[in-house]
Image 1 (spheres, helix red, strand yellow):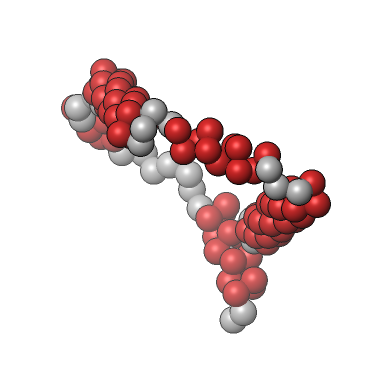
Image 2: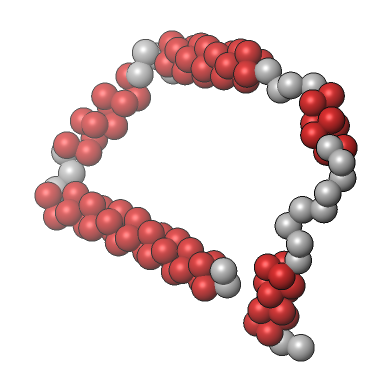
Length: 114
């Protein structure tokens, strides 16, 4: 059985099955006894991650000489001939366009199976 036929068969089987089997409220009782996931911990984790990222960014900025390497690189780029800047910008555009095209084709192939 080929893959497409198997997926069609499986899809048909899942659609035709009974969606819920009566269990006299057992599922509802079990769900009520499960511990609730607290959102407080999620927001605490997000805050810790954000503070850590800000501290790490600040520390790396200070240890790198207050970002002097950025101004040095900007000066170096400004002294390049205009043709080089055009070639670099065109290459970056082609590269990003190619990556986007590959991602779009990949996503289209994923959607064909559903």
